[in-house]
Length: 347
Ligand code: IPM
Ligand code: MN
Image 1: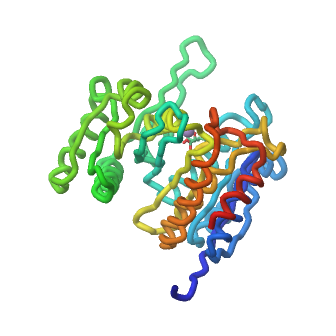
Image 2: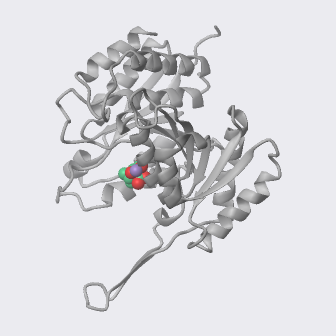
Image 3: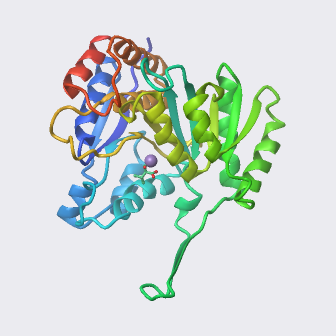
């Protein structure tokens, strides 16, 4: 092996179970022999309540200088009134996705034994900077009987195309070379038309990739009943958000689902985080499932060019999981630390 490269990683533990699951992920990475220079950032609900700050401009600038960002989870407890809804989501998570141009949200799903879809093996490529998440819209005559609220969906040619191209490249690199566009072209005739045209055009450059189209509502049925039809799914921001929670559930539980928020152009760091949230209800009990965090860290290694270590971590996770009795949702385990140790021991 050549001289190990040190990677500068910003670590945002965040709220609830975030810090607990991340410390297991970092333990596994060090067992894999990867050298990381970590810098911890206090961000999230607790930080906001203490300082009144969601994400300072200077902090965002500092984050730009890292090779990658590893994030646990951010968010206040469900029902908390101290943090206004959307403040952290938009001000921290979405701000990082937008400002760091993390335009691909890659979420892989491989079915676990005993899961509703034990044989599924697909990746969702969710557009991550546009759609209804872009923040277009507003109120008219707020708090009057004639109130109007609009929330537009922003779809740019460039934004759709770069995401679709990424999905085709990914499909080409996988065994089945199959890509499914998921949208709602029968109703969303403007944005759906743009997505469909872009997919049709880019497809001409990828004759080796077979194609399919599903309406998002039908995709929810197929994902449960026939998930084997999927290899790579490409979809817009909101459909991707909803579909990946469903995918997490059918593949064995949200406690196992990892994600990569990628800036494929590498004009800045990419961000890696489990699909799950802060789960305040089990925070501090030492029972959060760290597997999603470990897998997200493996995606980070791959992005950092540590392909061999990434593969070893993935294999260690798979080996560990194959020895476990099937778990219902995977949201908790008997011991977070013991799961981290068990995976680390296999490296
Ligand atoms: C996710 C989350 C976020 C999203 C929230 C926390 C803003 O649900 O990463 O899937 O909607 O994208
Ligand atoms: Mn979500």
